[in-house]
Amino acid sequence: MNTAPLRLCEYQSCLVEWSLETRKAVLMAAESWRQAHALPKPPLSFGGPDGSLLRAEQYVGVVEAGGVRVEIYPKLDAAVVRDGSMDELRACSVMANLLWLLKESGYGGLVDAGEASVHEGTESITDLLAWLFARRLRQQLGLGLPHEYRGQRDDLNLVRGSIQFSRQATVHFGRPDRLACAWDELSADTPLARILRCAAEALLARVRLPGAAADLRDGLAMLDDAQSVHPMQALSDSTHIRWSRLNSRWRPCHDLAQAVLRGLGRELHSGGTESFVFLLDMNALFESFCARWIEKKLNVSVHEQVFVGKLLMREQRSLHQYADFLWRLHDGTLCVGDSKYKTANGEDWPKIDDTRQLICYGQLAAHRHGTAPGSLMLLYPTTGAESSETVETYDRQRLTLQAVRVVRS
Figure 1 (cartoon, rainbow, N blue to C red):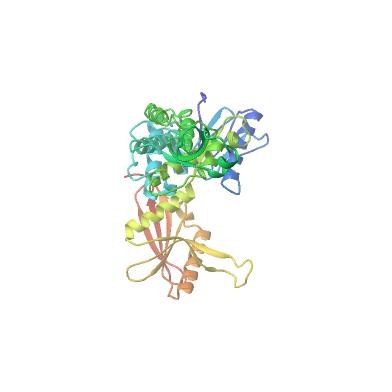
Figure 2 (figure 1 turned 90 degrees about the vertical axis):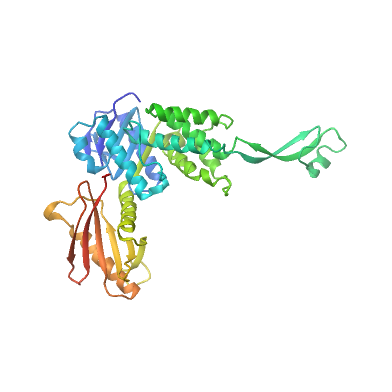
């Protein structure tokens, strides 16, 4: 796509001067992604009197469809995007921080421990994704191709492997010159190689980083023996991959390839205008980051999305409650935490609903575990210095309001 991207942040809205066909293409791509991820609403929507008001939800990434590209940045970078000064340096800084968050949180297994820095001018999610995949693919290909023994059957003049006696006795009865053979052959045209090649081709068509593009071309050259197939077929064939200790090293690369191909929503389902969607749920990413933050700061083991009890004592519609985090301190104190991807706004912080919810989690957890009410922690993001404030709730629980730094020091 040659047009300049439209940049906005999570939850931002902006007027667009797109044709009705372009808006339909963007909306269809977003809707396809929503259905694929079983979400209540799409990541992008249109509103306003004439339907030209574009609104983003809590997802960061890229949506390409109808000849336009929408790049969605974290809401903590809203000032950078709103003032119209998203130059190359700032864009690279935003992507570097996002990469750092992915690495520290382990979110989705998208970033390995050794991939915490970008040495090239990564300006968009598409470039970041291509760089990650190219680097991961190059590393694994350097250790060997994804070969696999695949069963072969053919009628030959000489014995190869074993003879299929049922076929030999029926189809070739009385013909010693034709032998029904079955054998295993080491092949480079495997379901794993196909999905890797398909993802590399999809990213190569979109990447703008010269280094990542060169790595993708090298990877495609090494995967030349694998068939170039349609993304839908590559995804379908990947369900037949037999995972074992022999090919387990390819799993992270395979998972990233799947994430890439699942973003080709309209190509997969309707075969219409080319589109590409890759988005990250920032609420889930921040939650994963906070879990790792607690473990590192307090040296404890954190359990995520823990059932703490029911609000109603009945069989149906009992309203199960799940806390984001549950852990015990070294003195045995039971602690409950909740992450809120919201910025603290002076007197309006903390939010009443968030505080009430966390107090309820603490009471339920104490009742379920048979202990006295313990400690609570409400974690929220900041781009400045980390800080904390400890207060006492009405029921004598200790509540810590913890600002967690989400940019690299």
